[in-house]
Image (tube, rainbow, N blue to C red):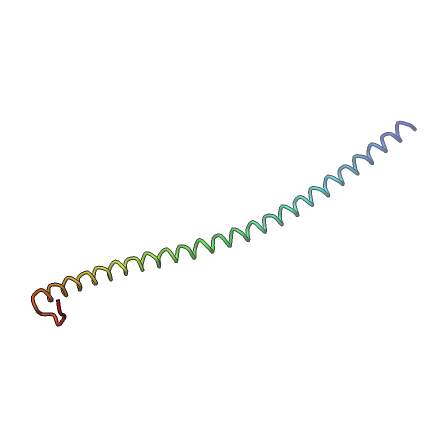
Amino acid sequence: MEIEIGILIAVIGCLVGLAGWLGGRDKNVKDAAEWRGKVDAQLNTIVATVARLSTLEGSIANNTQRMRDMDRRIGDMERRCKRSCRHGGGSGTN
């Protein structure tokens, strides 16, 4: 009878241990899923930010080119104005 009680206690201990391990594993899976959801949300935010930055970079490049074009045009106009003033074609006084 002593051996049977010992085996019964051992089996009950194994079942309690198994139940605790399974419960902890389920909690870990739930926590991992929660963590992954948060990470996914943060990654989505980062991806959206990168997309907006790419758009801004394109706009900046476009504006930089437009500014270069305007600088060139202003330089051309200044040269024409100076030539015109040197040849007496301008209405300004020197």
